[in-house]
Structures are given as C-alpha cells and as structure tokens.
Length: 123
Image (cartoon, rainbow, N blue to C red; front, side, top):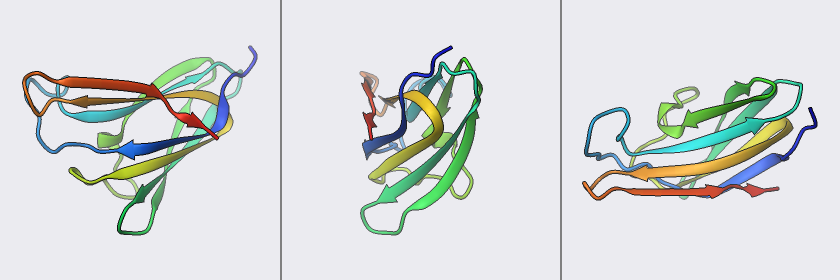
C-alpha cells in the first residue's frame, strides 16, 4: 500500500478535565489521538508534551502496526510521566513513516457532555 499522511503533527490545544460523569471508562473525560498507518511498515510514534509553565516532557512512544489504525488516550500515557489533569498542554507527534492523525476530546464534566474532533495540524 502507499503511505499517506505526514510525519509531524501538532495539537496546539490540550486539556484533560479531572471530573467526569457517567460510567468509566467509556464516559471518562479524555483526549485521544487516532492514527491511520496505511503503509507496509510499522510506524514508530513519539509524542512530546509542551506546557505553559514548565519544560516539555517526552518522548512518549508507541507503535502503529502497518496497515492498521490505533487509538491512544492521552489519559493513559504514563512513561515518562502521566499528563496532569486540569492543565493546558500541547502535543508534538512525530512518526518515522507518514500517518494520518486525528485528535478527539470527550468532556463529560456535565451530563450534557461535549465531543470535539479535529484533524491535527500536519507539519
């Protein structure tokens, strides 16, 4: 298959609320990156997190197998450290093969929850 996408993606606006309503884990407030790797090679992904008031943290690492999709919650990133809740952040995503990246947020602090999804900025 032919690879599609880019090797660098930026999410300028990130925020994970500490509060949620509804059953976990489905309705836990979260941010997600969805990746499409249409190439014949596994994609090695690194994520660096930037903050307003401290140095960046990373890299967080994951693999998206060839010709597969992968959904990763920012809430689940633990190494090198968890992303703090109720804190503004941005993310730089880099891949060794072109991938398509999409960012989604579920904010369930209220019963009338909000879902936002957008394609990340390719760099």
